[in-house]
Amino acid sequence: MSYDTVKKKLDNGKLVILDGAMGSELEKNGAQMDKDLWCGTSSIKFPEIVKKVHEDYINAGVDVITTNTYASTPISMRNYGYEEFIEDYNKKSVLIAKKAVEDSKKDIAIAGSVSASGSFYKLGIKKMIPGFNEQLKILTDEGVDLIILEAMSSQADIVQAMIECSTKINMPVWLSVSCVIDDSTNKVMLGYNDSMDAPPEVYENFEKSLVKFSKLHKGPILIAHSNINVTGRAIKIVKKNFNGVVGAYPNVGFYKKPNWIYEDNMRPEDYLKEAKSWVKNGSQIIGGCCGIGPNLIKSLSKLKL
Ligand SMILES: [Zn+2]
Image (cartoon, rainbow, N blue to C red; front, side):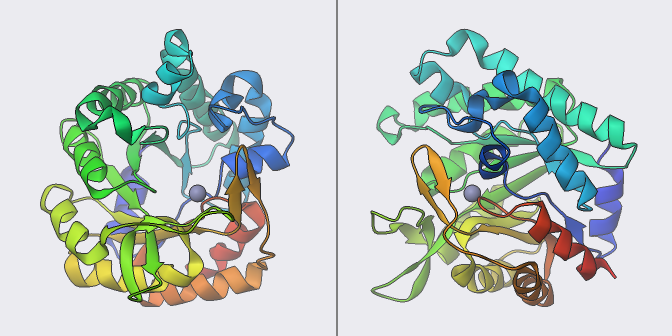
């Protein structure tokens, strides 16, 4: 476990394959989702299933796996009465990922997912910052190889706050954000759309927010948890405005609390075709988010040939 191999690949213009969804895969494998913390409780309640999902991705040929910590944010855990378990849940998630890598005997990097899940905007940014710092500290202390700020579905000011917190740690940091097309203007916006029942949440102009983010964030920027139809356009915007590494891990399907609904039947050959176009447009990191499982991730290994 280390970031060296991934760094070498990125420095040499090669492709890095990231894993796919955690939450929706855990569900598929029989882990019961928590009504408040979604898959945030799985590392404690279903550690074997969490390990199996990591192993499925390792067997599918990924270079990087991501800890099951997206939903176990200190802010969310505090809010739902899990305060005393914040460290336990996050540490256990890293340990499971480490064990999966060790057992595989492969050179796989572990990304610690630090997210804004359950950030409850009503709290105000100031109250969220300690939570971001706390999760960053637990995951880096526990020995992940890189941090991925999964700022997806977040508004620009929250993304900005997460970036600022991440500049204080001594570790490679990737940033992922969500995009959505604003139907009224056809512009690519920072925002997301993952509910069958509600219109998309549209925040600010994506290009403008990106210019702000890239002032402080120099590591890779990835388009994540976004519909496939906006991903290609968003990648082009990142390439135009940012000198660093670009990547993508979109999703398929919809969220209906507390479950992910697989409504799309994306075939591996279709996902590969989409991924090829993202690579052609300059993406160097490709993976998948909600609804994208090991079979689709496996199709990406053809991109490496
Ligand atoms: Zn997702």
